[in-house]
Image 1: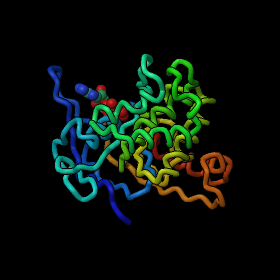
Image 2: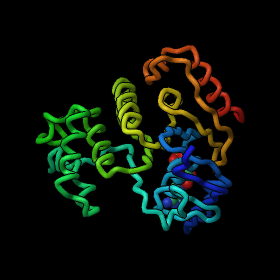
Image 3: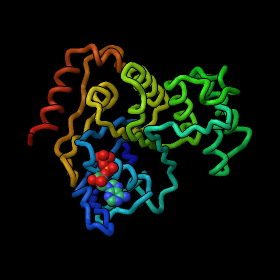
Length: 255
Ligand code: ADP
């Protein structure tokens, strides 16, 4: 299978005036094309740090990161980053919010504008193109944020707790919805979450991190015997509880 992302023996420590905070130790894993991997671990263990390294926002102290076979610094692959808050600008319409990344990256053209309209149409926001973010529900806003990311045609999507600002009911439906869109678009995705049921309902594989400094405790492939492998069907399947308990136990095995 094609590897879009490879991390080998990554170490990272924060150096501040107050001292050193080792965040990651000896992290190695890869992400295959079209694969959806969830990363779970205790709060503050280093999950966001891992995504910042992959996004190239910070550099590893030791180890290497390759994207589509090239070192991160030399890679021209587009990486999309989706955060906890949708970061939509209220003074812009939904359509103009979706165009923001294209504007920043000087990629605005008739073709990319048409793609923006197309994605808004496919994913049910056509009638909200001229609306402002405050006129949309939390779920619709998160969809708009995803479309803003997708229109840049990223090969890899980094999702850092993208649903955690939503209330429980909404995050269930939005999580499932966004997960389906990512699958439909054939993207490779890395989801950081503290919500085990979100990880089990969305991912192909779950990587469990230890407490800080994070190392990989275990990787669990998620295999469901379902005709339609949707997040909702997964939640209602017998395998769901088994995987949930397995990951829960592994996360809490020191306590
Ligand atoms: P998580 O996403 O798993 O909650 P983070 O990756 O945000 O964890 O943080 C890992 C550890 O590194 C935490 O203990 C946090 O306090 C520390 N940390 C994060 N960012 C910085 C920073 N800019 N400077 C110093 N320490 C940091």
